[in-house]
Length: 301
Image (cartoon, rainbow, N blue to C red; front, side, top):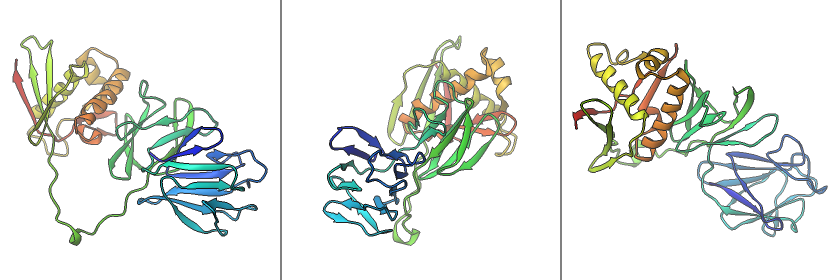
């Protein structure tokens, strides 16, 4: 993740995809020095690296020993030093990796940060909506009742608060003629269930690699969703396996809010094992969900 270090204070500032720098209250990196303009400069992720642009500031933006012209853009690399209004108050890019997704309350407060390609709002412990990265730089916003595309800088209400999303942009694509396209392996799920169904083992198989996951309560929810999809095999692929959240909650003996927490935790654990979060569970308007179209096997312990 991109990180700026304030040399004199020793503080670090993690970078979202687009960081407005200045004294204005609208700036993500807000500086108090009088030599800094209201909207002084922008530091942004281009998809290939970090870029600094001066916004016509009164006292200039410095990259190393060079002052940028008004509106000039310049690439910034790890180790480069930046000055806003003066060379003496230095910031250094100490990590030039791509930005991580985050959301900030519009009225101020601590940000929420994405983990494993998922940004839960207002928190992972009480998710009302989740932004999911479905492919590099492309995100959807998921609620109980819908999935829809979401973009950088979009405003999203959650937990009684209005949040602004800061989402990384997509990397430039290599044209298909320039590379040999290989079909990615689809992870498979293997459930092993005790006769009384009190114990469930879950293994993720990705090619020749098999990862047995630590037992979790939500594994039985995944098993239930897999069974519903299998039992619904005569339906079309589009209609197969859907269930209302309230109905699933009754089956599992929990409330609907717990189902959302289970989904979040399942995506986190299986995401660490190589299962794309958006592929594990799918949602549909009307508060319905289903297991994604992953290969599934079920055996007895």
